[in-house]
Image 1: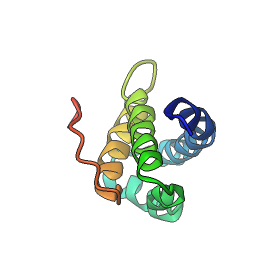
Image 2: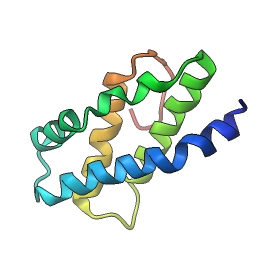
Image 3: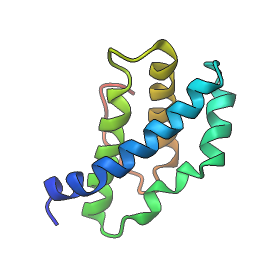
Length: 107
């Protein structure tokens, strides 16, 4: 499957999951990592990388996770959502079991 098709296949469901995660984080009215981390664990979000099979698919999905998380760092999102986006980037970096060592301008 081409990279574009992989993006299209995973984009909507993954973005929806990210919005749910950030929505729950926003309901806490906090910017503390402990709050974000508790929601992350409750949703078992670290398992998002388990559904990919091939190396190509894992690379594409990893790129997608960072692209979506990065989009929450930009306007028009509130400060709390932006912090949540930063926490997502951190968490994806830590929980990326594929070990993609791609340098990002953010990290």
